[in-house]
Length: 80
Image 1 (cartoon, rainbow, N blue to C red):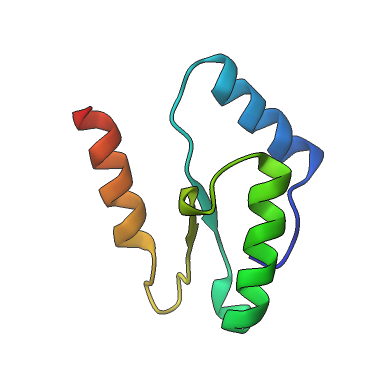
Image 2: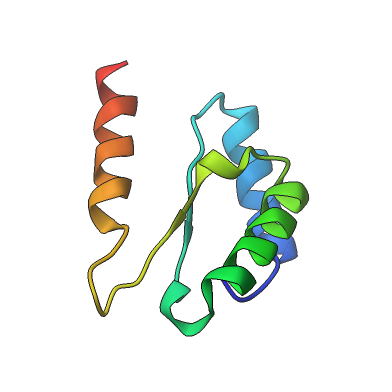
């Protein structure tokens, strides 16, 4: 949630696309930034990865926020 994607992140996204996989992006450490900062960073991340902002899930492992959302998305992908 604090950094733009690295070259390795882009490689992984491109691999997923070439394998025709559905992609979600867990934006970890979202508790380290304010909501406004997260929103601005999320736009940059989505743009860099060429993903819709809806594919990004803010995750805060300390407070267990976002983890259920990731599991729900995975369940939806499996069921499709």
